[in-house]
Length: 175
Ligand code: ZN
Image (tube, rainbow, N blue to C red; front, side, top):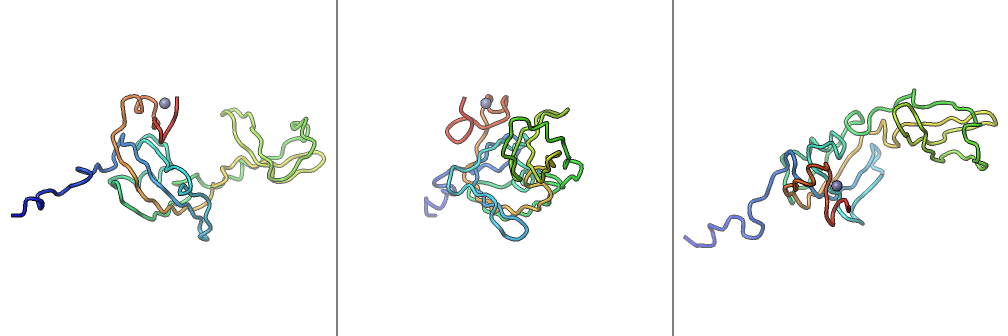
């Protein structure tokens, strides 16, 4: 028998499958239902997350389970498992006087709104002299999202990363 044939994992050793508490780095291209590209990591660093800690949208996290370094996949995540369905009740008309100091009101402007459940980012949909219609839905709410994923690295999280629930180091959070 040729000795080199025993060497099943010559360069990288045994690859780790994605499971609870794995640190995963991956590149992605995100497109909507019409194939329009919404976002991509390919011009920047890969996205880093700790698996099983709700760092990424639930539908994508589920699809990553069991995958490993070098795997590629294309997964379409329905809105409900992505940023949620579009909620009409998050569109509200508020008095214009709540925007004191804003002289040049325009549709598409974003504001931080203080609500009972904390700060919410809202976008101006419409306005009159008296009122402003704001939308508190996530910009990707109601959209089925397709991710082209290319998994770069899978490794075990450090104890500190698990305690914090996010990735540290050059690929992640600095502090
Ligand atoms: Zn941290």
